[in-house]
Amino acid sequence: MHYDVIIIGAGAAGLMCAIEAGKRGRSVLVLERNQSVGEKIRISGGGRCNFTNTEAGHTNYLSGNPHFCKSALARFTADNLIDLVVKYEIAFHEKKLGQLFCDESAEQIIEMLKKECGAANVTVHVGCDITDVSKDDRFHLKTSKGDFTCASLVIATGGLSIPQLGATNFAFALARQFGIGVTKLRPGLVPLTFKPDDIRFFGSLAGISVDVTVTCGEASFRENILFTHRGMSGPGILQTSSYWEEGSNIIVNLLPELDAEQILLENEQSKKELSTVLDQYLPRRFVLAWCERLGGSKPLYQYKKKDLERIAYGLQHWVITPSGTEGFGNAEVTVGGLDTEVLSSKTMQTHNVRGLFF
Image (cartoon, rainbow, N blue to C red; front, side, top):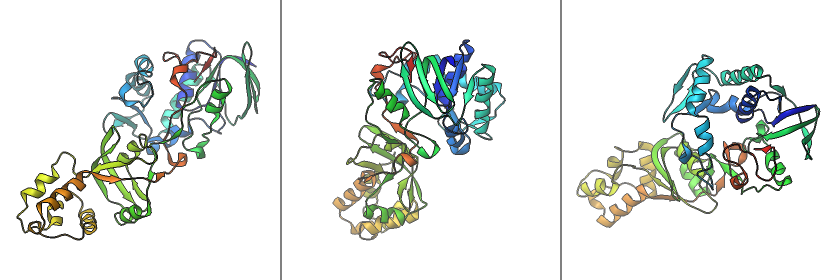
């Protein structure tokens, strides 16, 4: 069977593409290897789907070409999506920093997209494996649901993250098949792993969350970190992981917006213990463990000035060298992908293969 447009992948991107193409009168087929559409939508936002962010701009995107996403963000904004959600009477709320979540369930967003596909006369085949893609004057697809041809082929299969939901390297393999460059791929928004000594320390603090600034290279994030039996996680670590590369350090400032040196030196002659002073700013269990690493807590007047300066510096420049990441199985995104130089930023069509879109 022939279609104007075939879209491979029935996630958020694939379904939105199908809806828009269908609205323009194109005959559209969506092929999905899972048994249902929107699997990653279903688990996003803890099952409530963080469906957009009102503050999102081009500076929030990681890319070798930071201007690439400007056109897409200008052509379809967060407000456009909010209007669609409101049309379907889906209740939502802002969590923080412009993040919008469904009040009830991510299933509402999936149903909305399915209904929009129906209204646009989009055909969807689930449980469909693709065995071959070729091109002459049109694209030819061999699949477990039959053979199809199309004028325009859209690859919306996503990256390598969360393979347990069906993620594969299909998009990257197809890109290479058609001579399209792929950059280095690595997991992002993923917990980092640590050396045994660090894990023992972090494990003793399991369950404690601290508001910090985490820095990796030029990137800094003011977010919470969470200590676990496996190491350190939480939003601060997840954000940092997208910038971290093997062998590099991360720096944790345990007292953001404060001057640790000033706090300690102001109490230099005090009989207060170091742990008592730090208790005002950090969780008690963390303070006790931190002081133990320093050789125990003493009254501040028993420390030399240079020792207090060293302790203050350590509180605001805690250098940690991760040993790796937990990999694509626990990553929310893939860092890297298609070289944006080969794509039109307005249409996502490849420059060297007419009719092929990513």
